[in-house]
Length: 300
Image (cartoon, rainbow, N blue to C red):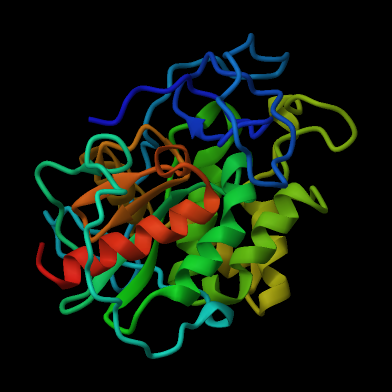
């Protein structure tokens, strides 16, 4: 099992992760570079933080490509177009003993179904509101570009930090997926939260969260996605639809089935899970992902 980490959203001098503990430090600074040491201890949340326990979003959702009712899988979101990978074969599987199950990666029991028959799925569990995910997403882009032709990149948006507005970011992601604009907007959404701060839950000029009444709303997200040709009224209507609610619920359920406790977390083919900390770093995360893909391809 994945060891339980202190739940915080920070990338101080650590291989940071955002985890679902409502008592974590919500004054985390923006994560902009790979970290190399252990995480900082949890601290008291700043004023304006909702200190309710971490819960999965009550919303539930499905895009037009959603899995059948009762399935544990969710409709995939493949790598954005600008991260398209060359058609290369998987590297031969070689076990040198470098990667140790139970230490560097963890088996998901039971293994979860995937959404791409004949393909090996690599999934990032993330949130736009997670500073560690912001720091890691360029590494994920490199992973997507490095995958062999028999593998596909997938994204699963988390909602387990309602005290940091993650359900709104999750809803925006699955709405953008349903409207077909995720491939064009994925990296830009991170920038809107962490660079321009137009969709940030954190204060722009100081540490800590904004008062909850000043948090960005789905209507604010709709204005952002208008840059990609989406009518804001249509965006809000789709965001509040049964299909998006269903997709969100399925994402929450699948994340629990994976045993995910923090973000970002990488999932390989519904069978294995690891974080950058487990792998030993950002570069090692790329190496471990490709090794697990080759392990799956070899049927090991």
